[in-house]
Amino acid sequence: MNKVSPKTLLNSKWTKCEISNKEKHFIIVDVEFNDEQLLTKCVIEAVFNNNQYEIDWKTLKDPNLWKIGWQ
Image (spheres, rainbow, N blue to C red):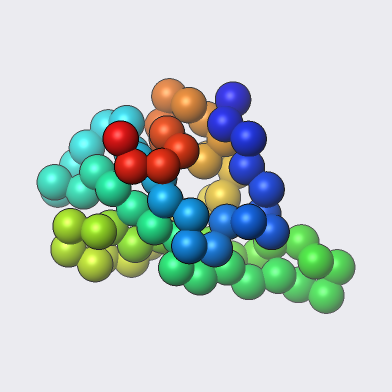
């Protein structure tokens, strides 16, 4: 399991294990927290073409889907 902290997600780099649309490397470009400091929004951007996707940040914990850093 990847160690992921919501407070350190912004600008972190990720590699997707299953490549689609030539999108392999990503960076977290936006995170939003609610009043209780719970993460409510996480936006990831593909480096290849700058496409942005809102994702559930908890999926980043799965090493079968994501690797920490650009690999």
